[in-house]
Amino acid sequence: MLELVNSISDLKKLDVKQLPELCADIRSKLIEEVTLSGGHLASNLGIVELTVALHYVFDESDKIVWDVGHQSYVHKILTGRGENFSSLRQKNGLSGFPDCEESRYDSFNTGHAGTAISVGLGLAKSRDILGEKYRVISVVGDGSMTCGLTYEALNNVQKTKMLVVLNDNNMSISDNVGSATLNMSKLRVGKYDKNKENLKRALLKIPLLGKPAYKFLRWCKRRAKLRYVRNSYFDMFDLKYVGIIDGNEIKDLIYYLTRIKNNVDKPTVLHIVTKKGKGYLPAEKDPENYHSISASGINNNSLESSVIVGDVLCALAAEHDNVAAICAAMSKATGLDEFKNKFSDRFFDVGIAEEHAVTFAGGLAKGGAKPFVAIYSTFLQRSYDSILHDVALQCLPVTFLIDRSGFVGADGKTHQGLFDLSYLNNIPNMKIWTPSSYSELSQMIHAGMHENCPVAIRYSKTLSETVRVFEGNWNIVKSTDDICKIKVLAVGYKMLETALKAAGEFVEVVDVTTVKPLDYKYLNGVGSAKILTLEENVKSGGFGESVAAYLASCNRPNVVKVLAVEDEFVSHATIDEQISMCGMDTENVARILSEMLANC
Image (cartoon, rainbow, N blue to C red):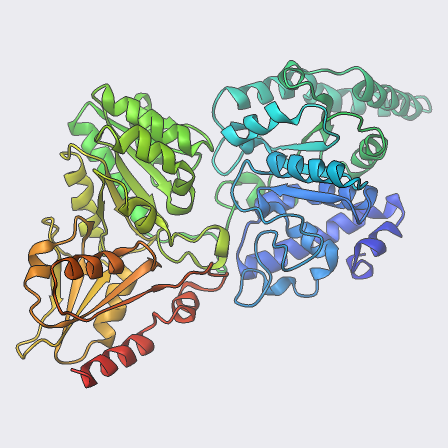
C-alpha cells in the first residue's frame, strides 16, 4: 500500500479501510530503514496511526508542530520524502528532526522537548493577525508535560483556536516522573483500562446481537467523549478535553479528528494513548533502549563516559552521605541508573526541566548537600540563567557533568554540544575542566567533590583509555628535544588525538584539562613559540579566544591561531565528517602546522 502513497494527496485518495494496511507497511519500512541508518525507532513506531490520521483528516495548508521532533519520521515518509528515507541522519541526507529548509510541510524546527504548544500558539496568533484560515495542531509527547515551557504556553493559550494532541505512552526517554505524569496515570487507570477489552470480548461472543451491541456502545462512548468528558488538569487552563482515545486504532482517530477538525472554537486537547515501539517486539519490550539506536543496533559499548560517571558517583555516595545526583529525564543515558537503585533517597530525576534541575541543585548545595547534575550539553544550555543566577552568583559547590559535548553526529544541528565552553566561560566563579581520558574524568569527579565553587566537567560520549593524571594543570603529552616552534593546545579526546596524529617535529602537544582557569604558568613559559588551539566548540567566546586574549593582555608577541567551529550551525553527519566539514581533521591540522612551521 505504501508504494501508492508518495504525497499527502495520494494519502487522501485512499479509503479508510485501506489505512490499517498502510500503517503496517510504514511500520515495516521504519523497522527496515532505521535499524540500518540508526535513529529514533520506538517513538516513531508508536505514532504511525496518529500521523496517518492527522494528514488524512487535515488539509495540506494546516500546520503540524511535532514535540519532540524525533517522532516525525512517519510525517517525512508521507510528505514526499519516502524515497530518500534511507538517507536519514546521514551527511546531505534527511534530518532526523523537522527542518523547514527540507520541506514546506515542516512547520517549525523542533529538537528539544516542550516547545510545541508555544510554537503552535505563535503560529495560531500569527494566523489570526494576518486573517488567514489554516489550522494549527501541536503534537506533544507526555514527557513534555514535565517541561516548564509547556505550562507557560498553556497558561497563555486562552481562547486561541488550536488543537493539542497529547501523545501519551507513559515514557519520554526514560520512565516519566513527577506529579504531571501521575495525573496522566490516574486518567489511564480511571478511564482507559482493561475493562474496555474485556467488555468487547464478552459482547462479540454473543451470537447475532453481540456485534451490533458493541458497535452501538462504541458509538455512545465516542459521543460521550466528544461532549461530556472533562479533566480538571486541562480545565484549569480552560482547554476543551477529549479523551482518552486509543492512539493505535486508526479508525477511532479518524472519527475523532474529523469531528474536531471544524469544531475547534477554543483550544482543545485530544488525549491519546499509544504503545511505544508498537509492531516490533524488541522495541515493545525495551522501549528505552530502542528509543534511539545506532546504525548497528542498540549501543552496547562496554565503556563510555556515562559508565565512569555512574561508578564514581556511587563510590562517592558510599563514602559521603551528602552526595546527591540529579538528571533531567535521562538517568540511564547519563549513567545514573545504578546510583538511582543504590541511593534512591539522594537521586532526583526532575523530568524534562533543566532550569529546575539547576536551581534545585543550588538549593541542595546551599543546604549542605553536594549535588552532581548530569545533563547533555545541548540541554544544559536551556538552563543558562539558572547556572548564572542561582549557582554561580552565590558560588555554590554544584558540579555539572556535561555529557555529549562537542560534535554529536547524526542528531545534528539541534543537539550539537558546541556551545558549552562559550556559554560557561563568561560566568564568574565557574571552573571548567575538560578530560580527554576516562582516568582524567574519574579524577575530576573526585576533585569536584572537594571544590567550594561551581565546576563544569565537560566530556564527549567516549574518551581515551590512556591513563593520565589530573592535577589541575595542563599535561604535555608530546614534547620535543629540539627547539619547540609550535605548541598545539588541544581540548578533549578527539582534538588531542587529531593533534598527536598531525604533529611532526618541533611541535609540542598539550592536553588541555582545564579551560577555566587557564594554565597561566604554562602560558607564561611558552616563550616565542607559535600556538595552535583545537576545540570542539564555537570559536566565539571559546578556549582559543581566551588564550589569545590572555597573551595579548600580557603584550606577548605569540602568534595564536584558533581552530574551532565558525559562526554556523553544523548539520547532521558522522562525527568524523563533521570534524572534517569544520576543517579540524588530521589532514587539515597537519597542513596548518606545516604552514606555521614554514613561516617560523
